[in-house]
Amino acid sequence: MERNVQKASEKIIVALDVSSREQAFDLVKRLSGKVGAYKVGMQLYNSEGPDIVRDIQLLGGRVFIDLKFHDIPNTVAQTSRVMVKRQAFMFTLHAGGGSKMMRAAQQALLDEAAQNHLPTPLSLAVTVLTSISQEDFQQEMGVDKPIAQHVVALAKMAKASGLAGVVCSPQEIAAIRQACGKDFLIVTPGVRPVWAGADDQQRITTPAQAIQAGADYLVIGRPITKAADPAAAAEKIALEMAEA
Ligand code: C5P
Image (cartoon, rainbow, N blue to C red; front, side, top):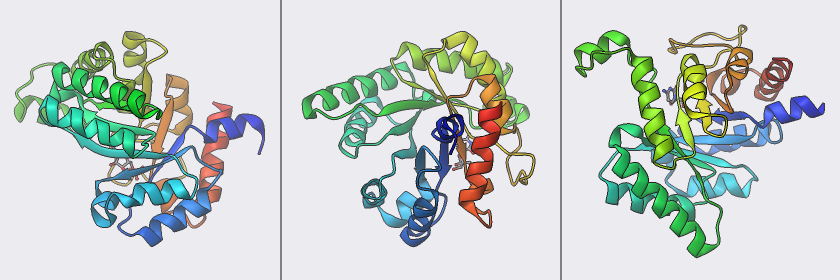
């Protein structure tokens, strides 16, 4: 693989939204060397238990544990310590848990990593879920302002709390990059190449557009995992990203 394409492929995180170890392993083996990490979300984690993380790591993959923690500061801080022990590459917590929760989590993370001489997992704040529309936001959550404005405020709070970055819609990348600077990680799902269907995603961009807007990592599920040849689909996406 050409060097630029190789570099781009490392920015792809594949969402392993499957229910069994066999399906997950099949994808990890097919995609080895073609992507940068594997995302284990609530479906696979709750189907197979936490050992699935170690087993993917044993196959050589980095694991993004996407369980979106949202609880009081002590609970999320103690769970962040577990993320260090599991050697997560990345993990998620909700910015809506507030700055006290995020600060406690980050402090616990750094402390646990230092004590055990382990790498510090990248902590990512989930801002507003991309499935929430402006209308839901106003009527159900009672917030009377544009979602994008709220997302940027949450991203700034996550940065001030010491977190490594955020998960957001590709359409919010540019505003967050401007508000939070170049060292703040932006990880984005909702990415669809023109040759793939949109599925249930609403606010999408292409891989090239997400890279041009300044994303650090793209989370991509079905366009790769449901493709007849997942490795070829990942390569095609990496090529598009390298050319962006
Ligand atoms: O298959 P697809 O590419 O749509 O998968 C996107 C992945 O990103 C899923 O695992 C989904 O849970 C996750 N995600 C998302 N939108 C968010 C946060 C996470 O689609 N706002």
